[in-house]
Image (cartoon, rainbow, N blue to C red; front, top):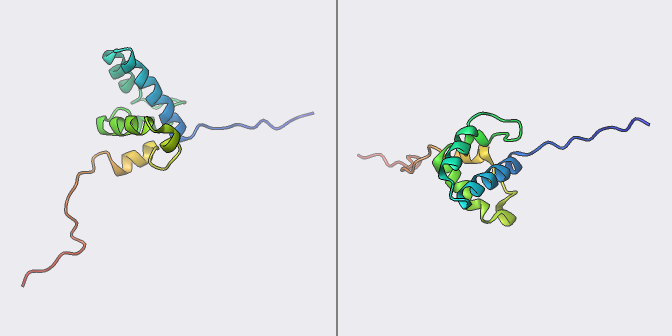
Length: 106
């Protein structure tokens, strides 16, 4: 009997969990050079890393993901724990004043 093969692809959040876990293992072993090398390696788009190259090589994206990783049972599968969300909402975004309600001077 020919059964259909079901393939489960890795989601962006799952790939980020795997990448942050690997990065943290380097830090736990006090191997900062290994952690830095892993971040550089993540710049290439690997099959298992999905969009991790958007957040891991970037310091603020990586730090945000590491903070959420501590709460992975609560935050691990939310919209915020996603490389694309981190890129769109955190990386390169700096505070400022919106002019949506700008008052014209007389």
